[in-house]
Length: 215
Ligand code: B12
Image 1 (cartoon, helix red, strand yellow):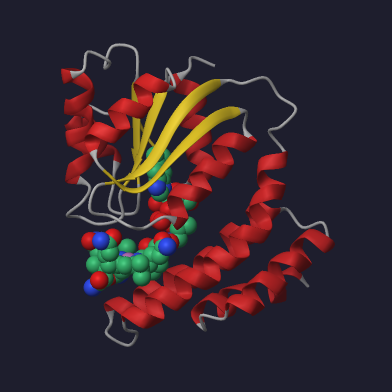
Image 2: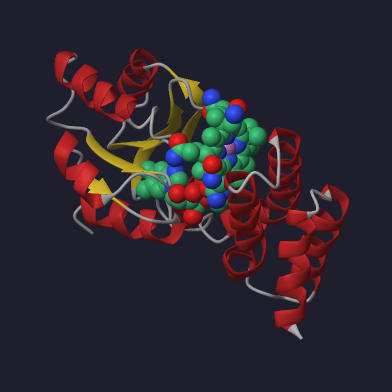
C-alpha cells in the first residue's frame, strides 16, 4: 500500500502538482507513516527524476521550479511533525545553517534543518544565497557550535571554502565546527577545504553533527 503511495508522491513532484503533493503529505500524517520515510522514498526520488529530466533536456526551468514548489508544499505539511520529535529534548548544540552565496536551492538545506531540530539541535536558518560575512556574523551572534553550509551547484560549492576562510580570519575557527553538504559535495571536497564534517543526506547530517559535538 505504501509503495503505491510513495510512487504517487514522486509523481506529484514530477508533475509539479503542489496541491497533490500537499494532500499526499497530509495522508502520510493521517496514516501514521514516518514523515522522513515518505520524504526519502516518495518525494525526493520524484525530485531526482525532475533533475534527470532537466539534465536530459526534456524538462526546462519552469518544470524545475514547479517540481521544487511541489516538494516544498509537501515539506510544509511534514516539517512540523519532523521537528516535533526534537522538542522535548535538551539542546545538543547550536547550529547556523544556510545555503552559500549565489545559490538559491533551499529544499535540501531546510530538510537538513528539520532533521537537526528533530535531533535536538537549536538551528538558526540564515536562508539562501548567504554571504560568507553573514555566516560569520550569525555564528558570533548565536555563539554557534557548528556552521552548516549547503551548496547545490558546482560553481557555488567553492563558497563553502570562503566561509571557512572568513571564520579563520574572524578568529572563530577554533571553536566553530564546519559541516558541508549538497549534491555536488563529497567527503573528498570536505577534506580538501578543511571542513570538519560532511553528510550525504539529512539523516546523515544529524549523525555528523552529534559526532562533531563529541556525542
Ligand atoms: C529544485 C531544483 C531547483 C529549484 C530550487 C527550488 C528551491 N526553492 O529550492 C530552482 C528552479 C530554483 C533551481 C534553479 C537552478 N538550478 Co536547480 N535543481 C533543482 C533539483 C531538481 C532538485 C534539488 C532539490 O531540492 N533536491 C531535493 C533535496 C531534498 O535534495 P538536496 O538538495 O540534494 O539535499 C540533500 C543532500 O544534498 C543533503 N544536503 C543538502 N544541503 C546540505 C547541507 C549540509 C550541511 C549537509 C550535511 C547535507 C546537505 O541533504 C539533503 C537532504 O537529504 C536539482 C537536481 C537534483 N536532483 O538535485 C537541480 C540542480 C541542482 N539545479 C541545477 C541547475 C543547473 C540550476 C540552475 C543553474 C538552472 C538555471 N539555468 O537557471 C538554477 C540555479 C539557481 C541558483 N543560482 O541557485 C543543476 C546543478 C548542476 C551542477 N552540478 O552545478 C541540478 C543538479 C539539475 C541538473 N541535473 O542539471 N533548481
